[in-house]
Image (tube, rainbow, N blue to C red; front, side, top):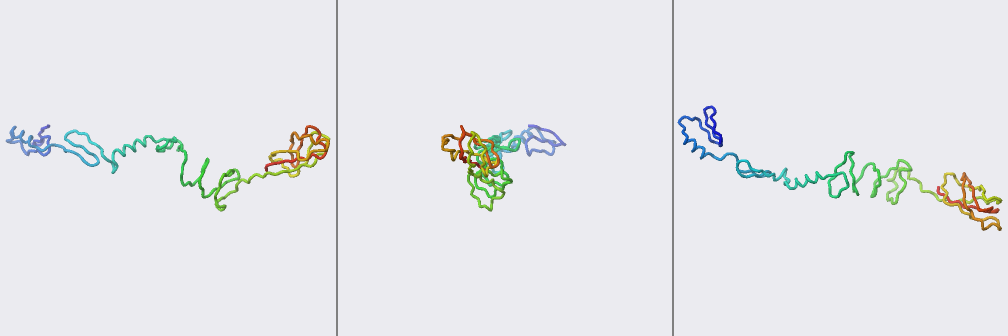
Length: 232
């Protein structure tokens, strides 16, 4: 306990013990005053922070803003474990580029999307034929689709003019054939003369507008006709 004299006043280190003068004040009086002085400090705390006892004691935080301490501790652990990886039951933390990995995201989406999207859409806008190419299932009113979807390919078949015979390769006219067509198959629809009906077509090349060149193992004879199937 500190006892000090300031401005002619005697003050002890206990609360509430002051003497207006030391004149005629003996040692016994001082000891009695100290013994009967009220205890210093406080006896305890309650509420958000609790503590009990006198002197230096340990205080316990019970709650902050109405949230109990254990809930706050759990939340702090969850925040510290946040990650940009696709980790189940973990808070999302964007990486340095502002991105994060995820599996399935269910949301009401508004804006542009890069990648694969499934679900129900309100409006689909295609900026060109190449941006909307494959739809496995589409259930939208026509009025909600803008842009020009890519046209479905056509499968077409053309026949050549009859072979003139006399050669194993011959350029034949195939009216309607385009150089931009994708040729799916070329078969011999009608064989040549009676003496050469067993000679098969072995190939074709040199596609031009309205024509191509057929190749046989031998002269197919007069009258061989080719059937050309294309995708356009």
